[in-house]
Image (cartoon, rainbow, N blue to C red; front, side, top):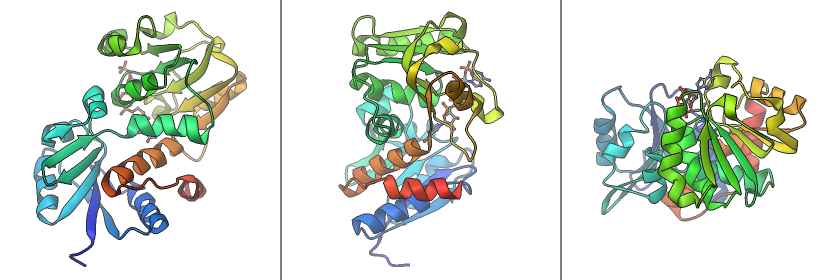
Length: 276
Ligand code: NDP
């Protein structure tokens, strides 16, 4: 191994499935950057030790995936505003001033919607289904786009309400609201499924009237076949889009943080899609 080459990794458990090494290798080739990027299985309960071992080996930064995004908050010496808002860290940067924790998931979502799908969020009515980690990370980047409305609907209503209260001041009066699925009243221009329901082929119980004609229906999950949510949305006049672009864009944001150059995602997204 070349000691001069900057080293990065992704920590997770499990980690074998991760596409991050392939994505970052493609970004490095595209931007002419010399770096190595590997997968690292961190033991449950041993995340902090794994991070410090990697730093001792000369690591410059890391991505963090399930189940360590909350542990990564504790490991960081400083958090970016968006990481603090999300309450979770998916990107670590090892600097001379210490470990900086960032969260690029929400920015990745917004970049995929606005730049790749070509759908502006400004002035739009947005419905977000779910109030877990991915939803929490998405709220601030979505609000920064100044939607006219952001409704957070969740199975456990109290979790959605807590999220609404956290962001109410930032969203301006009346922009952010929270409810259960039975109280959702459409139509919306952008509907984002940030639940993990699709993992089990479940559909959050929303009425088809949530989809305005030509609305964007976004599922953070991705796969070879469209999810139940995306099929339901397409059957009711919405344009479906899965979360593969979000994956590529959150990686591009992390790469930019580490390397100071923002890669293009179009080709890597095509490569990832072809291999699903
Ligand atoms: P969490 O476990 O933190 O949150 C799960 C959320 O889903 C909660 O709001 C939960 O509701 C809800 N939920 C779970 N099952 C159901 C169901 N059957 N019906 C309705 N609601 C349900 O998960 P994450 O937020 O970390 O992940 C959510 C999704 O986002 C996953 O599919 C994940 O793969 C995807 N993701 C994609 C990324 C990408 O780059 N494309 C990045 C990060 C995540 P309740 O609070 O009531 O339990």
